[in-house]
Image 1: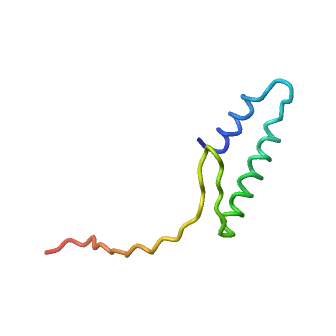
Image 2: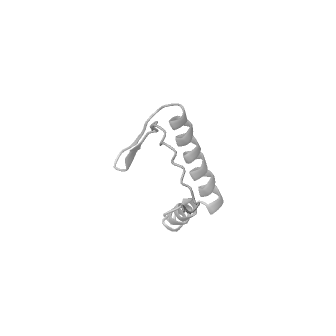
Length: 73
């Protein structure tokens, strides 16, 4: 699922009483992702009940291996 799929799903599964346009839903999703990104970049963890936890981790660099494409004689 990508962002457009999420917006489409939210749009199609609204209650009939208060419909929100796709444009407004797109703005809401963008603001949500921007806020999540900001929090993660500030070293915070995000916990959403019944969904998941999000955090950034630092991994060590992988060694670089150079392969030669020349044929050996």
